[in-house]
Image 1: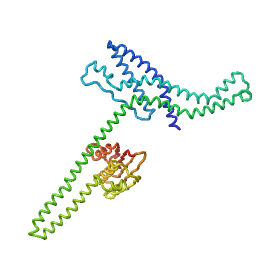
Image 2: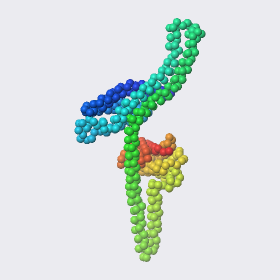
Image 3: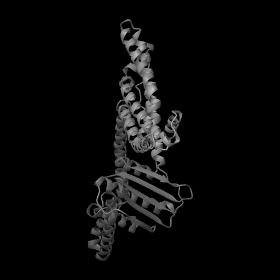
Length: 414
């Protein structure tokens, strides 16, 4: 109830206060535009047009601030194109005329006028109905009493006071119920124009920048993963294979002279071959584990928890499959985080919870270790943040010194 009343008051403020603002803006902008165009041939109109565009920008910024309250989202202000470096005085002066958003601001300041009138009238009418109707028993009594009506007539025995009172009370109740919807509709009518002309370009630009950042993060995460894989192969299986080749060469030389020594060398080579295969399997699990592709997140995360040297409490609240990129990202975050916990946290227990709500997968990993983890560049968690950003996900780390550590990953999905 309180949030509904707050919404009605915010919308009412937007429409009532915005009406005189829209009127003043309309007069100034239309006058400035007409004067600027009319005198443009003698160049006097150029600074007038520039000034008009700057005035329109001021009114547009005010509207954007109100839109933040009405639409319930952060205010979005477009970046106006600055003048080129080294531009002359005249070029800097006319720079607002080269920005498309400046003309959209001017267009909004003119077009919003009829919208402001309609929304203002709707707001005043639908506020007046419940206010005047619900107070009729008071001012109606005063009107009747000052008219010389007797007490009997006031009580309804002669005049139609009580039937009128009941009618107005019912009308007031109905008006009170309809008021939030009418005011909200009027606010959205005006706000829709403002959003289309004042923030849509900025929102589109922000979306493009987010996609660009996501693509760059994906490329960076993939490059880091490839470098890590190359380093792991070089430090592990490659060295083992070189050693295996040397052992087999030694066994080949020993085969004629000392068969028993050759037999022992071959046995060591077989052991080294198995160890190399185990290491290659461990590396492949970090890339595309078969259990994840075949059975989904729950079994794959259970397998990771089972291999971790720190006891893991697993709470998986999803039982369906998701996009392969989403599943791979969640798996990779869990695998890397468990590795970091085992190596650095000195934790005695770790908890993993995976849930799905409102088209979002939420992964929460906690431990009782020493803390100190963060996503600064150069640290392992930075790569996880980049990997999630590539699929519009987000990584939040809360790890004060001394612990505990809580890592939350949110990934949009359908």
